[in-house]
Picture 1 (cartoon, rainbow, N blue to C red):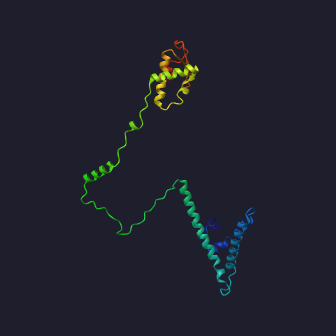
Picture 2 (cartoon, rainbow, N blue to C red):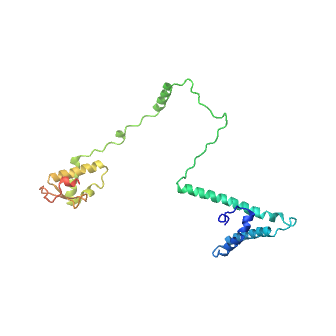
Amino acid sequence: MIEREELDITKVSLAQITDQYLEYIGRLEETKVANLVDFLVVASKLLLIKSRLLLPASPSIIDEEEEDIGEELVRQLVEYKKFKELAAYLSDREKQHLHAYVRVGTPTVAGSQKTLNMNGVSIGSLIEAVRSALALVPSEPPVSQVIPPIVVSLHTKISQMRMALQQRGEMSFQEFVANLRSRMEIIVSFLAMLELIKGGRLSVHQEKPFGEIVMRYRPDGQKASEETVQPGEALE
């Protein structure tokens, strides 16, 4: 209410909004009892402040504790305003994804920072020291010795594909390569399929470009018919 009226937080401004505050309390129908008690406490303080300003009493009869009620409420509102502004600032930083804050180092006490004395130390001696340190731990073996390269034979893949098709009669190329371990095996398997097509032991069918390639075994060894996809078309 104070911000809407563009007023400073003082006892005078609190007295000016007392009637609006009481009207606001009257509209709180669903407020919990515990929260409503807090509203009524503030309302009683506002009424007391307004009555002091409208009907000033003799200083001799004003109790010191009652005199501080206005100042106390003003102080609480000033603190609340600070927290509200800080919360809005942090909310803006969060929306801008600025979640990091620079950590300021602890200032060093004068004279406590130590410097490294490099007198008498040369580049050659430093290199020799590094070599001596590295010699304490044996070097790692080359990657080719730790993980041997996978050797894939075209002849082996042709035999595997022929045996699989002899058992099932028909299967897709995707099924054949489903459990292979590397891209190299898939490439060699594709070459094996082309070799079997070339030798007349295999016919393939592909309903649409980039579709699934279905392989059928041809035990008679005849050439694939004109309807069969040729190796160049299968590469699509």
